[in-house]
Image (tube, rainbow, N blue to C red; front, side, top):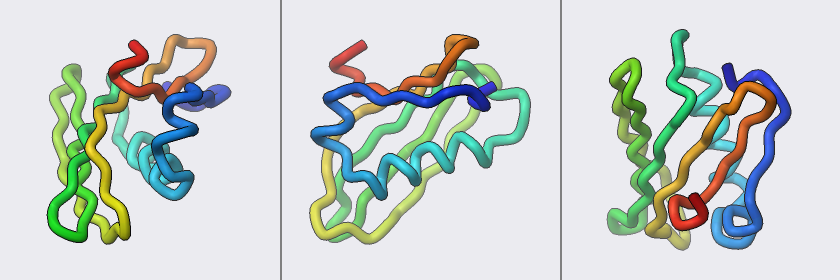
Amino acid sequence: MFDNSRYLTCGVDSIIPLELQLFLWECVDRLPEPKDYLQVFELSPSGTMQSIVHSSEQPKYRKVYMIPSDRPITEKLYIIDDGDHSTMLLASEY
């Protein structure tokens, strides 16, 4: 799962910095199998740090990352694998 063609929406492209996009894909790549088809990322500022809460339902998973950021953002994103391709999108675009 998640080893197919990868896409992102215009919303992600315009709001999420490229370095952060790559970090989120890497988080999914590092997950052990089995992986849920729906990966959830909640981004929020924590001082000068970007807080990232990565979670999924089946199997239950939750991990928090704190990374330095000049401009931390608040946003919720999904990465969804539909079997043919994987897509990163903002929750508001779902």
